[in-house]
Image (cartoon, rainbow, N blue to C red; front, side):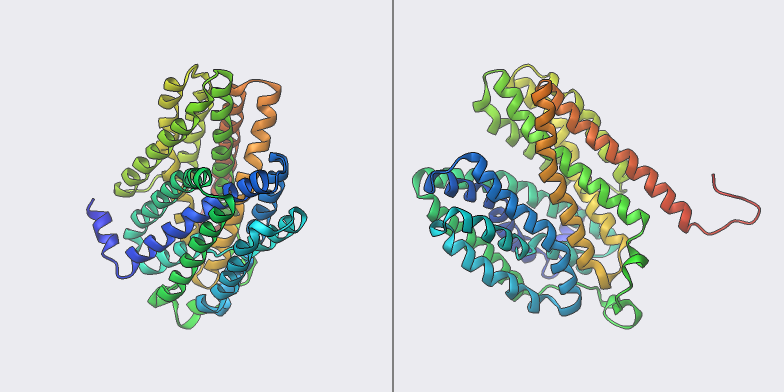
Amino acid sequence: MTRFRQVLAVPGLTPLLGISLLARTAITADAMALTMVVVVTLGHSYAAAGAVVAALTAGVALGGPVLGRMIDRRGLRTVLPITIVPQLLFWSAVPVLPYVVLVGASFVAGLLMVPVQAVTRQAITAMTTAEQRRAAFALESVAGEVSYLVGPALVILCATTLSPGVVSWGVGAAIVAGGAGIMLLDPPLRAEGETSGAAAGRPRRREWLGVRVVAVLLMGFGVAMLLSGVDLAIVATLREAGQVSWAALVVAVCGVASVVGGLVYGALPRPVPTWLLLGLLALVTIPAGLAPTWPWLCVAVVGIGLLTAPTLVTVTDAVSRLTPAGVRGEATGLHSSAAGAGFALGAPVVGMAIDVSTSAGGFATAGLAGLLAALTGYLLWRSGTAAVAPPVAGLTRT
């Protein structure tokens, strides 16, 4: 726990994590809030709600790198108002927008989503030392798990007592408050040694977006695809067993295990390679579909949860280490886009596997996708390391 105390003692980091938790809780709940509005208020199908959520997700994936690049060039306080104002307008109007307009507006809102996660990660990189960074990213990952556990559940609870329109206003207010809080806090996005001279320059993309960065982004895509598929496979498994009402508990167990795993990993003295953690996560995912009932499934997802946050931490840490300060915003945006694409692709791919086989096939497909990403990432990383290794007289690398 000494590592975490040292991290939380860094000036400005604790309020940053608190504000980030508020905004990320709302952002993880935005899809559920839009679904409730489309289905309950507008009276459309769940498929129609899925189209709205897909439009929002696509906008977030496309807008992340662009906003990151703008932050690199213009600074945080210049860019954040460009995202805060559209969020205020969008979420205020959500309950009264016609469906067709809502689809288009959701895409625009996604393009201009407040980049809370990316900014938090940039700030952590700038505010902490290399020794503190893994513990700091572990806390950030734990906050993400907490937001995932709380956000959607809170929306469902409030929607049963209030109208979906009021819930959407609350989600929007939290996103706007989070963005405004970060803007007022104005955390540094570059360390002191990165703010002047050559470190402040912006290298060309081909100079930093090399094989190793691509490997890390691919593994970030893989872990997101795996986790998205696991959520769907959990529901499918319990539906086959006639126990779908226990799905929320199983997901909660997985989330709590992830929190524990993140805290344990952040306290370790040495890091573990990303490809190894992702490979282990994939291997424990594949047999989870053999669980016949919800108690056994709770046991099976503990292993998945324990490895989830550590894998996410290593991806985030690698992106921060491999990219220069002048392009870190764009790199973090690319990381967010890769993860978003993985989450968007995981559910339909695993869903098709479940349709042609069983729920066990869903877990197997999710695990195999993660295993393929881990293996490909490892091979790319090795080739990238070989490419940059200094030559040794009389020897060649094999």
